[in-house]
Length: 583
Image 1: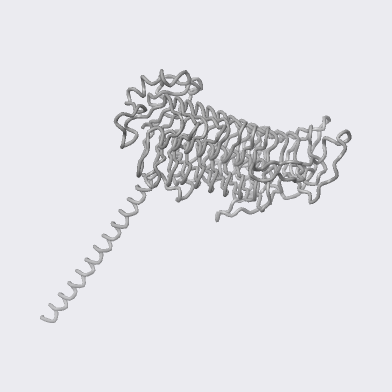
Image 2: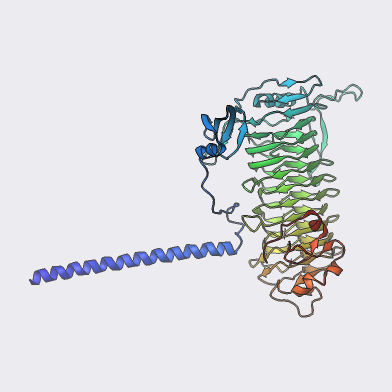
């Protein structure tokens, strides 16, 4: 009996030990779970640290299967062409269906890498129905046979260049050679009276940087008109270390009404999904689900927008697009030269790099205008000279804005010279009739709701985006501008965005050496508010009385699109409703 009792006691002790171990393991699991939950909440509270992944991960719907896509369309699968591409039928008609949900009319045959001469009408214009015919056009420019000056090339069907992104993130398939030619030697100059308009053109002075010697590069360009006709090109893959890379490497012509989807470029300097080096016009073009990477002067639409060139009415359709490089990186154009134009453009591509990083353009020079443009990227991330519109600007920016993305706070983040619209507004730069509602994160100094530093003029602008500088060591942090330099001006502007600072900041200006007039801030936007600050206003004053001092560019927010705070006149006339989020 004693032996049996000892055995029972021994077994009981073992059971108790097991129970204790189970309890300890459960406690550890609970503690670990709490740790990660708190960590995630802290990350969210910090508005996604710029060192984190470029794209904010959100809850996403499970992707639809091809069967579900086709069933909703009411068709039947006939053949699988690629892992993401199927031919289907509906009511006797044929279509091409993709796993991204697109269904296009007809059988779109992926490019096999060959070239075929397209149909040419009586007027000498060209119609493109297949990828091989687009390749033929490229070959003519590359070889120097034609630059298509005076010729209109029209897409009559969607084009599939055949490349795809694999599950491991690596692109495979056909490599596209951009429409550009490089010659080792400059050809002899032709007599201006006998030279042909429809031959390769020699570029004598391509200015790619004001601080770099002008280079002589003998480039063969596209000089005609490409009318996308609302058709799309997908599956483009460019992988090399050359300069001026895109669907078109170098264009002095017109590219219009074109859509590019599910494509990729990884190249050198001057990289854009449509044009690497634009010296003509790009109009009404759209891109979706694309990746653009280069060393510098990198943009989603164009890498370099040259003097007297323009980008108008172009749109990045979704925030899954990525554009990155070391410097001069922008959501529309990486490098925008003097006397050029970017207008009526929308960027949703995520932009990242080291310096001169902007939601619309990385850098832009005097004489250039950026009008009616807005940035709605998840993130614009850099180290210095970072802005929701431009990293560095000596140009006219008007009727434009950076706003929070529907999936995030539309973060603009960097270390020095960080602004909701512009990192540094340089001499001859004007920021007018514009606003920021995206969040700003600055790790060091010279951080502002509109501009990090102002060396020119800011007028009729407002900021409602939160400024988080709790990690910053500097004190030049302000609701409108971090530092307003001598001979610089800030007029009729206001801030209602919360300013979170480590050391000190100001509702309007962190450090002022210039002129400020008729500019105000909400008295609750910053903790340490000076008692007798003429710029400080109550919520009631901000919503009612300051409108007379702000001037004719503002109107009362009668439709509550900005929570009752004054809005810009053009917002009222355009029905802009982007500021409906609560403070």
